[in-house]
Image (cartoon, rainbow, N blue to C red; front, side, top):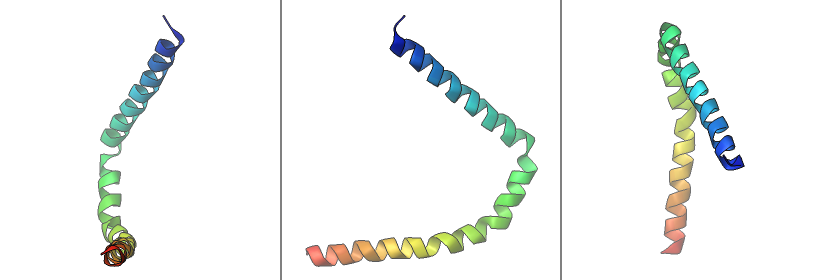
Length: 67
């Protein structure tokens, strides 16, 4: 057994434990997650829309300059 094997097993163990905790939390707090998601959907859209518009504008300007 090499050091790299031990490190890989350690990391995979933490990833598996984290994934299991996420699944258990999603099942246990399903109603809260759904309510929070539905209440905050418009807030996320309103927060991300200016970022998307800015990124599209920057891309358009770069393409216009490089033509």
